[in-house]
Image 1 (cartoon, rainbow, N blue to C red):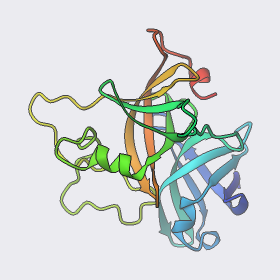
Image 2: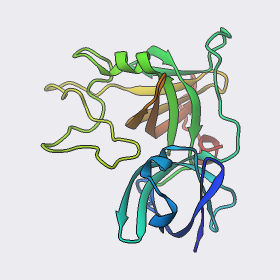
Image 3: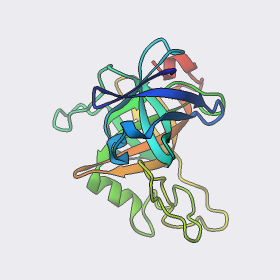
Length: 231
């Protein structure tokens, strides 16, 4: 046993194996299948306590596969567990976090949390946007984010996924560039270049999982350190 898996603030299972791909940042957890009665449990607040870390980490599960008595879980780190999540009050007139597409502010986002740095990318993050706002960004030929995500192959599906991968609604045309998607944090004066990779639809909001490719202070050209980005 190398650690513990917590779901919704309760101990769920001992972790037998935990490995992290140093290039992609995707971690693989091995737990006993008997401890997780339904994969839907992994959509809840999920935290890992690992003997190699100095503190518990919040994770987001991408998928899980049961192999005999073992459940193999794929997940990403989305921040320190127990720290307050930044939530902007839409009625306060002092919005903090915005989703920017090709230089245009699209909508506010909330509950932004950022994981630790990895070699080939800065980190992963998760955040929520309003359900209607996300639909406007994704649905329709001219929607700003219609081309974001993987192009589904024949027979491709998200069956068994905890957080389904984002599928492109349309393919880019010849010479067409993918949209530049950013998060701007006004209070922290920070800008993050992101690559949305998965979503989970709720009743009133959409949870978006993204890779952070670059981070820099607003109105500055230099990049921030990994420690600053994951603080």
